[in-house]
Image (cartoon, one colour):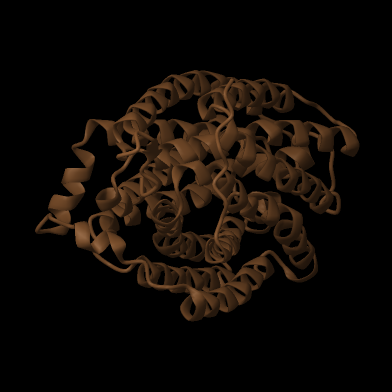
Length: 426
């Protein structure tokens, strides 16, 4: 297996990575905190699993719809301005969540937050593909995805502590306060990103959107992303409720569980990012997907289990989840041309969110509970379903890998001395 040369980062690129990572931290935390708050919300608002599943999927569906509506415009504006606009709306939606005291109001607040927050990831991906060569993106994805681990190490445990002390609304106020500081930093320090504007040829946003969807290569990336999201979202909504009602953990033990899982993510993500820049990304993805599928089935079949074993199982499961996210994100980011990146990332993010919403809603239908505090039923079926979805995701990612390698071959440039170099603008 041949190693590839590592391309170093500039000082400004390092700052952009940090800025996008902490932005992702807040967006992911806003979504992630719903899972550990699940048992508390279901008991406080007297919700059945299906109703809570809809509360989680409401964010995903609204994020998906928003992404589709904005995809046609995504390549027609300075990416910095788009990021500031949608991040500001995300902050407003998060504040609304903190003000919610009934299920209908919470549902509306999650929809508003999703309308803005769901687009931020695609804007960040477009910025990454504009500013970083493919040979750097594995490491970039590793650092950006550390927001996922960081939200578990710091955000979720602190959020749970605040929720236990002041109610389930408190974590949303924490996210809103932190996001305001980050929004100011983006406004003051991030440089305009406008190189893509010179490449626009379509006369209308709708035509640009259709132009992007019509490309067969792009549709392969969309399908792969959707399958990954369906598998990834199915277990998440009921994670805390399963841990408390089936595994026998307490509300006080949940912060430690999420913190340990998060620490493992922070360690795993950069390592996987470096490996995916040096080793074949598809091979890493395949091995990680198989491992994740096995661990999901084992975990969803557990009964009452000591905390230390639950922690170990979560770490092993997180190894698979994180190790497939990094190479898959790097591969799918290499498919679009620069002129289409904003629209492509917008549609890709939308399908990711919609697929995740479908997964959360389906999980809410599969999982049942006889009453407050009773064990969840049929959670194991979710684990078995993930295996089937994972098989299809490997097949689709194989197609994406083939397309990326072909694109790399087409983008090679021969200079007079005969040396072949890669077009780093890809």
